[in-house]
Image (cartoon, rainbow, N blue to C red; front, side, top):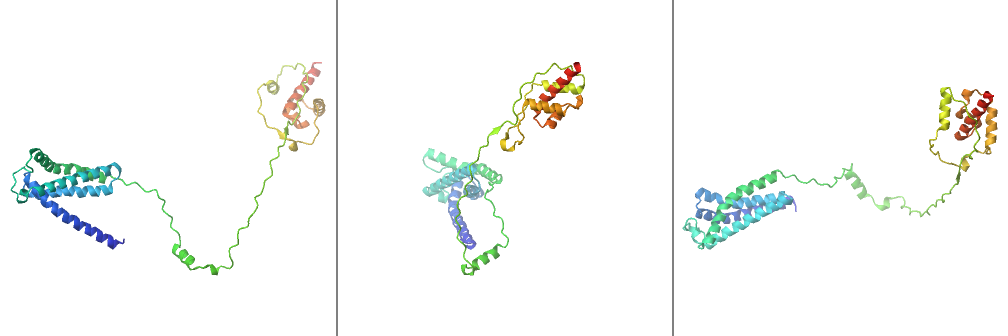
Length: 301
């Protein structure tokens, strides 16, 4: 429905509601006069009842959750009250001429007391419920929508027009069919056995070494006697190991003696031996301790 049609629909609704209010206004004014209201109060009384119904209807369209339920209850209560009072007005012809006794809406006393209580409590209820509904509407915060907003497309009209004018006959050649390709099979992983880089050396008896006197000798002895476990550095695969033939502990010791024959005692360290004979740090420390022991034995003789 376009805007013009919606405007006509709203206008028709306003006209119908205005006419219905005029009919109800006549009955509610006579009821107000019967319960002791003056001319001004009797004229405003229909606006108190039916006006709150309109306010509750607007609040129902705005509010949500529990507040909307409250507005629906107010709307239903005042609609039922207005219906009852209009029904009583139709049953008592004396109300039309304002000849009924003051405060008398029914011949049966309990019914009369209930109707008078209903008619007199509606203005007070309008003050309370109307204020509450207005406060709820003013403090209402609509829930933000979570739908993503589409980003604007540059030259959208131009691209749409280009696609609509293009036909399949303008293409130079048809789109080639996709070529089916066989899946590439990867070779299974090969497990390479790992071995230790060096063979364990046989323990070599070491003569009693003299008490170290220099700081370098103290650190060397402390490092040799340390029992702290060292972190494993991993195993080297066979393909990455050196092609040099493995040497026995005796061969390593002979080569170390030959290389370090002219070295001073200060230079005789595990790192220097390891670089000279190309062996592991463990073997280098063992060779260092052995060579130092031999030199100490020679010096003692």
